[in-house]
Length: 63
Image 1 (tube, rainbow, N blue to C red):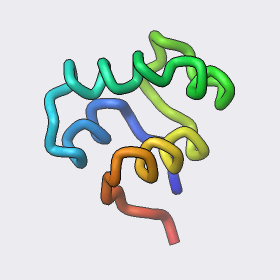
Image 2: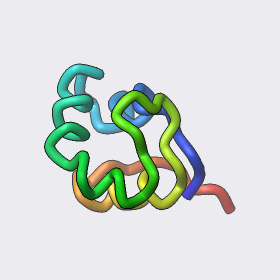
Image 3: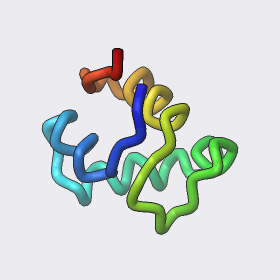
């Protein structure tokens, strides 16, 4: 997995940024364990992998 912006994951999930933000807010404690702050625009690879698995998002991987 590679780092991603929140808006890129929202697009990949087919939801608005507002909806995606709500999803992230519901899981802020888990995301904090990955080092993600609520104001972060870029998500680290481990957080991206967890979000994609949790919400069934098909996001391109780096070879």
